[in-house]
Length: 346
Image (cartoon, rainbow, N blue to C red):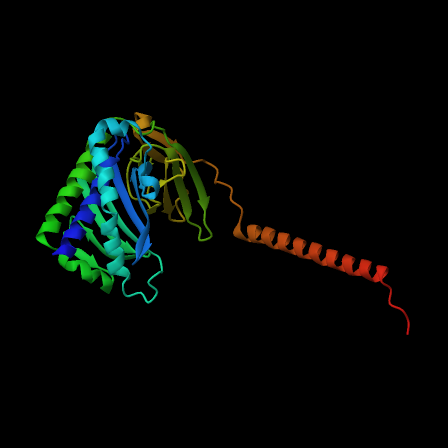
Protein backbone atom coordinates (compact mmCIF):
# COMPACT_ATOMS: atom_id res chain seq x y z
CA UNK A 1 0.00 0.00 0.00
CA UNK A 2 2.85 2.35 0.86
CA UNK A 3 4.49 1.52 -2.48
CA UNK A 4 1.29 2.31 -4.35
CA UNK A 5 0.76 5.56 -2.46
CA UNK A 6 4.28 6.80 -3.19
CA UNK A 7 3.97 5.94 -6.90
CA UNK A 8 0.65 7.77 -7.16
CA UNK A 9 2.11 10.86 -5.51
CA UNK A 10 5.12 10.75 -7.82
CA UNK A 11 2.94 10.41 -10.90
CA UNK A 12 0.52 13.12 -9.85
CA UNK A 13 3.40 15.53 -9.19
CA UNK A 14 4.83 14.92 -12.63
CA UNK A 15 1.54 15.23 -14.43
CA UNK A 16 0.87 18.51 -12.65
CA UNK A 17 4.04 19.80 -14.30
CA UNK A 18 2.33 19.39 -17.64
CA UNK A 19 -0.17 22.01 -16.62
CA UNK A 20 2.32 24.67 -15.66
CA UNK A 21 3.59 25.39 -19.13
CA UNK A 22 1.76 25.47 -22.42
CA UNK A 23 1.66 27.47 -25.54
CA UNK A 24 -0.07 28.93 -28.52
CA UNK A 25 0.73 27.77 -32.03
CA UNK A 26 -1.85 29.76 -34.05
CA UNK A 27 -5.37 29.37 -35.20
CA UNK A 28 -4.08 26.23 -36.94
CA UNK A 29 -5.55 22.91 -35.90
CA UNK A 30 -2.76 20.71 -34.58
CA UNK A 31 -0.93 21.15 -31.26
CA UNK A 32 1.28 18.80 -29.26
CA UNK A 33 2.25 19.09 -25.59
CA UNK A 34 5.29 17.12 -24.37
CA UNK A 35 6.68 16.95 -20.85
CA UNK A 36 9.81 15.14 -19.72
CA UNK A 37 10.62 14.49 -16.08
CA UNK A 38 14.17 13.21 -15.41
CA UNK A 39 15.89 12.00 -12.25
CA UNK A 40 19.59 11.08 -12.01
CA UNK A 41 20.96 9.24 -9.00
CA UNK A 42 21.76 5.96 -7.30
CA UNK A 43 19.78 3.73 -4.95
CA UNK A 44 21.35 5.80 -2.16
CA UNK A 45 20.44 9.31 -3.32
CA UNK A 46 18.90 11.50 -6.05
CA UNK A 47 21.58 13.83 -7.42
CA UNK A 48 19.57 15.76 -9.98
CA UNK A 49 15.92 16.28 -10.74
CA UNK A 50 14.63 18.22 -13.76
CA UNK A 51 11.43 18.81 -15.69
CA UNK A 52 11.03 20.43 -19.10
CA UNK A 53 7.98 21.16 -21.23
CA UNK A 54 7.39 21.81 -24.92
CA UNK A 55 4.37 22.66 -26.97
CA UNK A 56 4.73 22.45 -30.72
CA UNK A 57 8.52 22.01 -30.22
CA UNK A 58 8.85 25.33 -28.39
CA UNK A 59 10.38 25.16 -24.93
CA UNK A 60 8.08 26.72 -22.37
CA UNK A 61 9.94 26.28 -19.13
CA UNK A 62 11.92 23.95 -16.91
CA UNK A 63 12.63 23.08 -13.29
CA UNK A 64 15.88 21.92 -11.65
CA UNK A 65 16.23 20.84 -8.07
CA UNK A 66 19.66 22.48 -7.87
CA UNK A 67 18.85 25.61 -5.87
CA UNK A 68 15.20 24.72 -6.57
CA UNK A 69 15.49 26.64 -9.84
CA UNK A 70 12.28 27.27 -11.77
CA UNK A 71 12.39 29.08 -15.11
CA UNK A 72 9.34 30.00 -17.19
CA UNK A 73 10.47 31.12 -20.62
CA UNK A 74 7.09 32.48 -21.69
CA UNK A 75 6.23 35.06 -19.00
CA UNK A 76 2.57 35.48 -19.92
CA UNK A 77 1.96 31.79 -19.10
CA UNK A 78 1.98 32.84 -15.43
CA UNK A 79 -0.99 35.09 -16.11
CA UNK A 80 -2.88 32.28 -17.81
CA UNK A 81 -2.36 29.54 -15.21
CA UNK A 82 -2.11 31.78 -12.15
CA UNK A 83 0.72 32.27 -9.69
CA UNK A 84 -0.99 30.11 -7.06
CA UNK A 85 -0.95 27.13 -9.39
CA UNK A 86 2.75 27.59 -10.21
CA UNK A 87 3.58 27.91 -6.52
CA UNK A 88 1.67 24.70 -5.81
CA UNK A 89 3.54 22.85 -8.55
CA UNK A 90 6.89 24.11 -7.27
CA UNK A 91 6.13 22.87 -3.77
CA UNK A 92 5.08 19.46 -5.11
CA UNK A 93 8.36 19.10 -7.01
CA UNK A 94 10.38 19.88 -3.89
CA UNK A 95 8.31 17.58 -1.69
CA UNK A 96 8.46 14.65 -4.09
CA UNK A 97 12.22 14.26 -4.32
CA UNK A 98 11.81 11.59 -1.63
CA UNK A 99 9.39 9.76 -3.93
CA UNK A 100 12.01 9.78 -6.68
CA UNK A 101 14.54 8.45 -4.21
CA UNK A 102 12.13 5.58 -3.57
CA UNK A 103 11.87 4.90 -7.33
CA UNK A 104 15.66 4.96 -7.72
CA UNK A 105 15.99 2.55 -4.81
CA UNK A 106 13.56 -0.03 -6.17
CA UNK A 107 14.77 0.08 -9.78
CA UNK A 108 18.45 0.09 -8.88
CA UNK A 109 18.49 -2.17 -5.83
CA UNK A 110 19.66 -5.21 -7.85
CA UNK A 111 22.74 -3.35 -9.10
CA UNK A 112 25.88 -4.83 -7.53
CA UNK A 113 27.40 -1.33 -7.43
CA UNK A 114 25.12 0.63 -5.10
CA UNK A 115 26.91 3.89 -5.94
CA UNK A 116 26.36 3.64 -9.70
CA UNK A 117 24.20 6.47 -11.06
CA UNK A 118 21.06 5.74 -13.09
CA UNK A 119 18.62 7.86 -15.09
CA UNK A 120 14.88 7.50 -14.72
CA UNK A 121 12.43 9.36 -16.97
CA UNK A 122 8.72 9.81 -17.28
CA UNK A 123 7.66 11.13 -20.68
CA UNK A 124 4.08 12.26 -21.32
CA UNK A 125 2.56 13.74 -24.46
CA UNK A 126 -0.85 14.65 -25.80
CA UNK A 127 -2.12 16.07 -29.10
CA UNK A 128 -5.20 17.97 -30.19
CA UNK A 129 -6.51 18.69 -33.66
CA UNK A 130 -9.24 21.30 -34.13
CA UNK A 131 -9.50 21.36 -30.33
CA UNK A 132 -10.26 17.61 -30.24
CA UNK A 133 -7.95 15.26 -28.36
CA UNK A 134 -6.47 12.72 -30.80
CA UNK A 135 -3.49 11.17 -28.98
CA UNK A 136 -2.12 10.73 -25.48
CA UNK A 137 0.81 8.62 -24.23
CA UNK A 138 2.90 7.98 -21.14
CA UNK A 139 6.34 6.32 -21.25
CA UNK A 140 8.49 5.11 -18.36
CA UNK A 141 12.18 5.00 -19.26
CA UNK A 142 15.13 3.64 -17.26
CA UNK A 143 18.73 4.26 -18.36
CA UNK A 144 17.58 5.16 -21.85
CA UNK A 145 15.44 2.03 -22.32
CA UNK A 146 11.67 2.15 -22.36
CA UNK A 147 10.32 -0.20 -19.69
CA UNK A 148 6.59 0.40 -20.09
CA UNK A 149 4.17 2.68 -21.92
CA UNK A 150 0.51 3.29 -22.47
CA UNK A 151 -1.47 4.64 -25.40
CA UNK A 152 -4.47 6.31 -23.79
CA UNK A 153 -6.64 5.50 -26.80
CA UNK A 154 -5.93 1.78 -26.43
CA UNK A 155 -6.07 1.92 -22.66
CA UNK A 156 -3.67 -0.79 -21.48
CA UNK A 157 -0.02 -0.82 -20.42
CA UNK A 158 2.70 -2.51 -22.47
CA UNK A 159 5.61 -3.93 -20.46
CA UNK A 160 8.62 -3.86 -22.74
CA UNK A 161 11.10 -5.02 -20.10
CA UNK A 162 10.61 -7.66 -17.40
CA UNK A 163 11.65 -5.09 -14.77
CA UNK A 164 8.67 -2.93 -15.69
CA UNK A 165 6.34 -5.66 -14.44
CA UNK A 166 7.17 -4.73 -10.83
CA UNK A 167 4.99 -1.63 -11.25
CA UNK A 168 2.09 -3.47 -12.89
CA UNK A 169 0.01 -3.66 -9.73
CA UNK A 170 0.28 0.10 -9.20
CA UNK A 171 -0.08 1.19 -12.82
CA UNK A 172 -3.16 -0.93 -13.46
CA UNK A 173 -4.90 -0.25 -10.15
CA UNK A 174 -8.27 1.54 -10.39
CA UNK A 175 -6.96 4.42 -8.27
CA UNK A 176 -3.92 5.08 -10.48
CA UNK A 177 -5.94 4.58 -13.67
CA UNK A 178 -8.48 7.23 -12.64
CA UNK A 179 -5.71 9.62 -11.57
CA UNK A 180 -3.81 9.10 -14.82
CA UNK A 181 -6.86 9.87 -16.94
CA UNK A 182 -7.74 12.88 -14.81
CA UNK A 183 -4.29 14.45 -14.91
CA UNK A 184 -3.67 13.78 -18.58
CA UNK A 185 -6.99 15.34 -19.54
CA UNK A 186 -6.88 18.27 -17.15
CA UNK A 187 -3.20 19.20 -17.12
CA UNK A 188 -2.01 18.02 -20.51
CA UNK A 189 -5.01 18.48 -22.80
CA UNK A 190 -7.39 20.98 -21.18
CA UNK A 191 -4.72 23.40 -20.02
CA UNK A 192 -3.05 23.23 -23.42
CA UNK A 193 -6.36 24.22 -24.99
CA UNK A 194 -6.65 27.11 -22.57
CA UNK A 195 -3.23 28.57 -23.31
CA UNK A 196 -3.30 27.78 -27.02
CA UNK A 197 -6.42 29.89 -27.18
CA UNK A 198 -4.85 32.78 -25.27
CA UNK A 199 -1.92 34.00 -27.33
CA UNK A 200 0.62 33.06 -30.02
CA UNK A 201 3.94 31.75 -28.76
CA UNK A 202 5.58 32.62 -32.03
CA UNK A 203 4.71 34.83 -34.96
CA UNK A 204 3.35 33.02 -37.98
CA UNK A 205 5.87 32.54 -40.79
CA UNK A 206 4.94 31.54 -44.37
CA UNK A 207 6.78 28.63 -46.00
CA UNK A 208 9.64 29.03 -48.45
CA UNK A 209 8.82 26.63 -51.27
CA UNK A 210 11.09 25.14 -53.91
CA UNK A 211 10.11 22.68 -56.66
CA UNK A 212 12.60 20.57 -58.59
CA UNK A 213 12.57 17.95 -61.35
CA UNK A 214 15.24 15.42 -62.26
CA UNK A 215 15.59 12.00 -63.86
CA UNK A 216 17.01 9.14 -61.82
CA UNK A 217 19.30 6.41 -63.27
CA UNK A 218 16.26 4.17 -63.89
CA UNK A 219 14.77 6.76 -66.21
CA UNK A 220 11.96 7.77 -63.86
CA UNK A 221 11.18 11.45 -63.37
CA UNK A 222 11.35 12.63 -59.76
CA UNK A 223 9.41 15.73 -58.71
CA UNK A 224 10.23 17.28 -55.33
CA UNK A 225 8.32 19.99 -53.49
CA UNK A 226 10.00 21.34 -50.35
CA UNK A 227 8.46 23.77 -47.86
CA UNK A 228 10.65 25.05 -45.04
CA UNK A 229 10.86 27.79 -42.44
CA UNK A 230 7.11 27.87 -41.80
CA UNK A 231 5.17 28.27 -38.57
CA UNK A 232 2.74 26.98 -37.35
CA UNK A 233 3.19 23.30 -38.03
CA UNK A 234 -0.04 22.63 -39.92
CA UNK A 235 0.53 22.60 -43.69
CA UNK A 236 -0.75 20.72 -46.76
CA UNK A 237 1.26 19.91 -49.90
CA UNK A 238 -0.19 18.05 -52.86
CA UNK A 239 0.47 17.54 -56.57
CA UNK A 240 -1.84 18.55 -59.40
CA UNK A 241 -1.56 17.93 -63.15
CA UNK A 242 -3.21 20.43 -65.48
CA UNK A 243 -4.95 21.80 -62.41
CA UNK A 244 -6.50 18.47 -61.42
CA UNK A 245 -5.92 16.10 -58.51
CA UNK A 246 -5.01 12.51 -59.25
CA UNK A 247 -2.63 9.62 -58.71
CA UNK A 248 0.15 9.53 -61.29
CA UNK A 249 3.05 7.81 -59.56
CA UNK A 250 4.63 6.85 -56.24
CA UNK A 251 4.37 9.66 -53.69
CA UNK A 252 6.48 9.86 -50.53
CA UNK A 253 6.69 12.40 -47.73
CA UNK A 254 9.36 13.31 -45.19
CA UNK A 255 6.70 14.14 -42.63
CA UNK A 256 6.62 17.53 -40.95
CA UNK A 257 9.93 17.95 -39.11
CA UNK A 258 11.20 20.70 -36.78
CA UNK A 259 14.00 23.08 -37.76
CA UNK A 260 16.52 24.45 -35.28
CA UNK A 261 14.71 27.81 -35.12
CA UNK A 262 11.35 26.28 -34.08
CA UNK A 263 9.98 26.49 -37.61
CA UNK A 264 9.13 23.40 -39.67
CA UNK A 265 10.12 21.50 -42.80
CA UNK A 266 8.22 19.21 -45.18
CA UNK A 267 9.20 17.58 -48.46
CA UNK A 268 6.88 15.64 -50.75
CA UNK A 269 8.25 13.74 -53.77
CA UNK A 270 6.51 12.14 -56.71
CA UNK A 271 8.16 9.40 -58.80
CA UNK A 272 6.65 9.21 -62.28
CA UNK A 273 7.01 6.42 -64.84
CA UNK A 274 9.70 6.91 -67.54
CA UNK A 275 7.14 7.90 -70.19
CA UNK A 276 5.94 10.86 -68.08
CA UNK A 277 8.29 13.85 -68.39
CA UNK A 278 6.81 15.64 -65.38
CA UNK A 279 5.56 18.68 -67.30
CA UNK A 280 2.23 20.36 -66.50
CA UNK A 281 2.57 19.41 -62.81
CA UNK A 282 2.26 21.91 -59.97
CA UNK A 283 2.81 21.70 -56.22
CA UNK A 284 -0.07 23.27 -54.31
CA UNK A 285 0.71 24.52 -50.80
CA UNK A 286 -1.84 25.45 -48.15
CA UNK A 287 -0.75 27.25 -44.98
CA UNK A 288 -2.44 29.74 -42.70
CA UNK A 289 0.04 32.48 -43.64
CA UNK A 290 -0.57 32.04 -47.37
CA UNK A 291 -4.25 33.00 -46.96
CA UNK A 292 -5.11 31.17 -50.21
CA UNK A 293 -3.47 28.03 -51.68
CA UNK A 294 -0.23 28.86 -53.51
CA UNK A 295 0.63 27.10 -56.77
CA UNK A 296 4.26 26.34 -57.68
CA UNK A 297 4.88 24.92 -61.18
CA UNK A 298 7.50 22.29 -61.90
CA UNK A 299 10.44 23.87 -63.77
CA UNK A 300 10.64 23.21 -67.50
CA UNK A 301 14.34 22.37 -67.37
CA UNK A 302 15.47 19.46 -65.20
CA UNK A 303 17.24 20.48 -62.00
CA UNK A 304 20.96 20.05 -62.45
CA UNK A 305 22.54 17.59 -60.07
CA UNK A 306 26.10 16.34 -59.87
CA UNK A 307 26.30 12.62 -60.64
CA UNK A 308 27.40 10.49 -57.72
CA UNK A 309 30.44 9.36 -59.68
CA UNK A 310 31.61 12.96 -60.06
CA UNK A 311 31.13 13.61 -56.37
CA UNK A 312 33.04 10.44 -55.51
CA UNK A 313 35.79 11.41 -57.93
CA UNK A 314 36.18 14.79 -56.25
CA UNK A 315 36.47 13.16 -52.84
CA UNK A 316 39.07 10.67 -54.11
CA UNK A 317 41.02 13.46 -55.78
CA UNK A 318 41.16 15.44 -52.54
CA UNK A 319 42.31 12.35 -50.61
CA UNK A 320 44.99 11.64 -53.23
CA UNK A 321 46.18 15.24 -53.15
CA UNK A 322 46.47 15.21 -49.37
CA UNK A 323 48.30 11.89 -49.46
CA UNK A 324 50.79 13.17 -52.05
CA UNK A 325 51.34 16.35 -50.07
CA UNK A 326 52.03 14.33 -46.92
CA UNK A 327 54.43 12.02 -48.75
CA UNK A 328 56.29 14.97 -50.31
CA UNK A 329 56.72 16.65 -46.92
CA UNK A 330 58.00 13.41 -45.38
CA UNK A 331 60.49 12.95 -48.23
CA UNK A 332 61.66 16.54 -47.94
CA UNK A 333 62.10 16.15 -44.18
CA UNK A 334 64.21 12.98 -44.63
CA UNK A 335 66.33 14.66 -47.31
CA UNK A 336 66.96 17.61 -45.02
CA UNK A 337 67.96 15.27 -42.20
CA UNK A 338 70.48 13.47 -44.40
CA UNK A 339 71.95 16.79 -45.51
CA UNK A 340 72.35 17.96 -41.92
CA UNK A 341 73.83 14.72 -40.61
CA UNK A 342 75.92 13.14 -43.44
CA UNK A 343 76.87 9.52 -43.12
CA UNK A 344 80.69 9.11 -42.74
CA UNK A 345 82.59 6.46 -44.64
CA UNK A 346 83.99 3.61 -42.58
